[in-house]
Every structure is written in structure tokens, then in C-alpha cells.
Image (cartoon, rainbow, N blue to C red; front, side, top):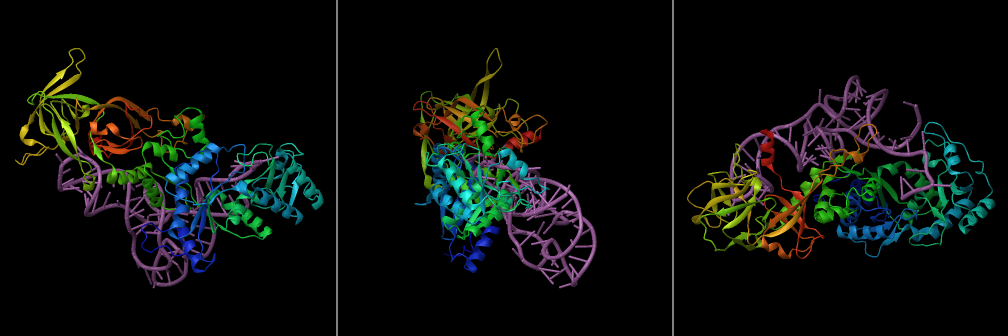
Length: 565
RNA sequence: UGGGGUGUAGCCAAGUGGUAAGGCACCAGGUUCUGGCCCUGGCAUCCUGGGUUCAAAUCCUAGCACCCCAGCCA
């Protein structure tokens, strides 16, 4: 095992500091072994990605190992579908756990035997109190709890009762096994926490083998211990469970991992709780777990995010203990950063306006050469058909051009990227509606390729497609799912659902894209020049492509225009 | 008014007694066959008050604010 390289580009953090120190003192014999322990009761989201990148990343960095373990202790909420999705998502993010895929349910028998060990040591007892009574006995934040009348049963009686619980002799909720710790502890987790509850429910992996299931608090620490985890990294809310985990480990006399807590990720303009995400899906507010507006890994993936961008983001936001909400624009920045380098550029007109080049030969078609990515020459060039009738973006023409507008306007000259310079000579409108239906322009034959060396300055460069060659496609534009940076910020009587952005999805049915896209595979990404990054949605059919806008390009013209109003 | 945490710019975050990194956002400029990318510059009385010290974001002390905990959820 080695120390993290000093020249690592990743910012340092308190967890690395702890690991460095443990390595120095040889606390775990030089080992670094982490784990990512999701409960299979929902889909993974970007917050989990932070944890995944942290756990797997640290292991990689220190030459250690990271396990994938499902915390599947509650059969009522957990499903195989979630397990499959989680496995796929973690893989997609780029991590590998080799043969170390584990389940807390693998340890049910061991946990049961340990429970018996605690009973025999007089450290656990069967309680007949109801859930309500247990709550009443727990006391409050400021008042100590009361001991259960069943707290001092004999070891023999506890053993007998616990075995019969396991044997299925008692109905759900009738009894629990509790740790005997301290009902007066200021830490509520230490007030005789429940270890086992009776649940006559089939488990997705163990079937009907068990009708008693361990609580998370009883299972988690021991699972880490069994796997010889060195650094059990988890979120802040488990900080005051740590004394309990340590108590169990100490009573059992088994290997002790070290728990380290960090602040979970929050992002502006979205929600991150599994419950709320589930609600969005179940109520049909989105189209599913992989809706491109969802902060789920599946959603981000369908939206066109790359694993590289997500990993970069996870690394750059850092890890600390202060509650934090990261600006979504930072995620988008990391995305653009990655896509800028790898996405081929392509021409797509979202809202087409017909342009006729009046001095261009009727049936002529030229092949113009276009670079695929100015950031990466190795991506080569392609041919673009150019002809007399083209489409340009409606927004690239103004009859009354505002100040600083350097796109097309009557009498103005602009460059068609990789094409020619053109000048608008006429505007054709619909007689009844007055809507502009077509532009007549002249082109300058001496500017082929979009360049002239006579010193002429053309400020505007437009994208375009040849009408006869373009492919109609559907494009889906996405905006934040919520209208407020903090969706939880609501008036009396309202919920986060009232903050859903009604315009988070805009579908444009008749866009025109260049013909080179004809064979684009679902999932493939590109940049629509001057618009943003897009990817092919799986909804695409052979005859009709569907594109998702992954993220727009930065648009400083939009800013200027807005500020001048 | 119990216990556990956290307070460094609009946001994230380094800093571990020697005079406030970096990134996002924002603003200003340059460059440009994408109003993208890129480049340059701007942007902090370190929660507050006392104290220790030649020197404090860092140490001491008294406060204040915010987050988490009273599931047979994880």
C-alpha cells in the first residue's frame, strides 16, 4: 500500500488526512479497504455518486480495495430491480469490485449467532412491549427513558424466546430483541436499541429462511467488521450511531473498522431524497427513474452525462463535514468541460427558417468540408452538402436588429459556417399573419468555405443545413426540474411538488439536422453548433431520431440581450 | 431547554501560529469561421465578543447561528 501521490490533482481532504495518518502508524497493517453500501430500495442518484467516487476512488488511489455491499435488511422495501440497476450504475460510473459483491443478508446467520452471544452475556433481551410502548419508554431528547419491565429476564428465557422468534412462533410486531445498554443515555441510539424485529416477509435473496430481520444498526457495523473494512465512510447523520457500532464491536470482541462521516451532497434546483424521487416517479411527475430531468445516475446517463464528467465533479466538489449545497452550474461546468473535448460538432437547426440563395445555381450541390472538432484535430473532417435552399435558425434573423446583434438582418452580411458569406436582400412574409416565411439572400462565390481574405469583417457566423438533405428530428430540451434553487422552500400548506417547473421539458418536433447524423446510435453524443451538447435518446426509431439536450452552451448573447432590456 | 456536528466570498473548498490556495457563479477586457472553447484582470474586516502571542482563520474563553437524533427505516 502506498501513500497518495503528493502531486495528485485532487484536492486534499480530512479523510485522506486520516488515512495518511493510519498508514503512518500502521493502524491496519497498511491496508485501505472501503465499501459502498447501498440499500436496494431505490435508484442511485448524484449524491450516491459522490459516495461511490469517494469510496472506490480512495481505494484506487491508495492501492486498496472497495467492496460493493447491499444493505438488504428490510425485505419490505427492497427489490431485485433496484439491485440490478445499482450494479449497472456503479459499473457505468467506471468502478469495479471484482468478486467482492456482498449482501448484508449473507451475514444473517453470523448476526444471529452473535445475537445469541450477546444474550448469553446478558447484553441483549427480548422485549414484549409494543412499538408504541417502546417509544413511550424511550423518553425524550431532554428526559431519560424508562426501562422495560422485560429488561431483566433470565438469559435462559431470552434465549428461548429469541429462538422461538426465529422459529416463527410469534406474529409480526409482538416482540423484538434489544441491546441492553442504557435507557438514560443522552444519546438516544444507546437507549436499548432494537436489534431484531419479527417480519414474516419473503426476502429477495433469502426467501422464507428468516422471519426475524436485523436492524440496520445491528447489521451494518458487523458487516463492515466481517469484510475487514478499514475506513467505513458514511454520511453525517450516522455520527451519533458510531458509539453504538463501537459498543457492539467491543462486546463481540471482533475486528473494529473506523467510521468516518462526511456531509452528503445537495444540489440546487433538484431534490435528492429517495422518498421524494420515488414520489416523482410514482406520481408520474417524470417519465421514470431514468427521466433525463432526474438527478439519478440513470437519468443523468440518459440525459447524456459522461461518467468522466460525474467523476470529475465528485472530485472537484471536495469532501468535508459542513452541510453544503453545490450550485448545479458547477455540475454543468464539469460536463461541458468534458464534452467540449470529445463531442463532434454538427449542424442542427432547431427552429428552421427557409433561406433561398437567389444567385446560387438551381440544381447545384456542393460538398463543403467541415472540421469535426476544433479542440481535437484527430477527430477529422466530414462533408456537408450545400445548396440553393437552406434552413437557418429563426432566431438568427431579425428584421429590426438590436444594437450589438451581429446575425442576419435586411442588408446585412453574415458567414454560414463552412459555407459562404451571404447577404439578406428580401424578406418574404405570409400575407395574412405577417409571419416571416422565407428569406432571400445572395451569396458571395468568392467566400467558399466561409472565408475571404480581402479583409472584410463578418462578425456573425451562423449554422445551417441544406433543405434538400436535412433530416427532420425531434429534439427534447430540458430545464431544471424545479423553479427554486431550494425546492423545499415552500409556503404554508404547499410541498416541493408545487415548485416543479412546468417548463422543464420542451419538445420540438420538427428540427432539421445534417445528414451525417443518419446513423447515430442511441447514447451517442455531439455538439449542435452554437446550441449545446446533445445525445441520441433510446426512444429514437430508424426513421426518426430523438435528441436530448444534455446541456446548453454558455450563451453570452442571451445575457447581453437580457441586460439591455 | 439532552447529545452529536458545523460555521472561511453568492456557492463548493484549501489552510493545522508567520500575515487568506483553487474552482463555480458574477463583472470587465482580449482572442475567435461556434456570441462556445481559450487568455487576462476584478471579486474575503475567516460567525461574534473578549483573551494569549512579536504574530491568530488557526490556541484559550464566553456567546450566537445552522444541521442531525425520540422508526420494530437505512
